[in-house]
Amino acid sequence: MPSRAETPVPPGNRSAEQPDVPGASSRRTQALRTTYEAKYRKVYALLKNDTALRRKIGETGRAYGIDPMHIVGAIVGEHTYNVDAYDRLQTYYVKAAAYLRSSLSFSYNGEDVSDFVRRPQFSACASMRDSYDLWTCRETVWNKDFRGQTVGGARYPDNRFSAVFFQPLYAGQTFGLGQLNPLTALQVGDIVHDVSGLPRLDAARPNDVYETIMDPDLTLAYVAATLKKSIEAYRDIAGFDISRNPGVTATLYNLGNPEARARALKAENQKLRASGQPERLPQENYYGWLVNDKLPELEALF
Image (cartoon, one colour):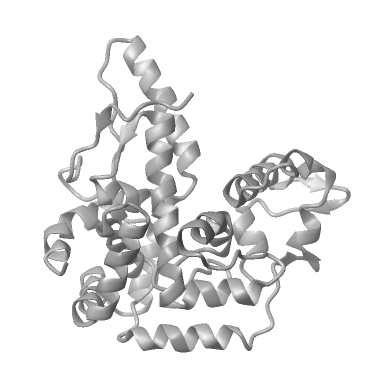
């Protein structure tokens, strides 16, 4: 039975100072001879200078029933800590078209993921029709039965399902305005189909998946759907309303697995209540902290 959202998470940061930024992000930024502030200013300029993009973000937020600032937060966080924003939106369209000409496959050691998930270990997922439940189930099976293990004489990497099967060009691969991972796009495909009417994605057609991720006219819907699922997970599982805190949703967008994180927070708070201590609110990480810190400036654009 889902919990009711009885505890609103107020706007703003719970931490007075920004949590530490992971070393990988720091090294990547140093290698590019730039700074986080410079990268933030670049994505801020993209938003400020493109009226059409801001309009699309607003329309998408309304379509998915979320504050557009959640979408803005995801875009800003990704382009501040992971990749630089392109100067013009048109570049994203060009990149999207390029993926139609590439030869891509979602596979590991020559085995396509569409064949891999037909293995008997995935039988519990077979009855699931909703794309989110289906791919989340498959990811869970990967973690339980394959990750870091030897199965049928084959050794599988101790790595995320998305990293092993859904990054055909290079590791750490996410693309587009929202820097979406292909597995995330596949998970929310049915939501996007129902709300936006876009065609359902198919793991057997990786070029279509990458084109969708890169195309600004398409990817915003997937970003919004991903954020909406995080808001619903924390409402239904942990009993928190995070819909007024873009820093928290940005944190979940950065970390992934919102259901597992909501369950962990619920279990932690049950123990705290049992010992007479106050509940712990969902908290922002370094990525979400920046979003909340910059929120007044970003809201002024809209």
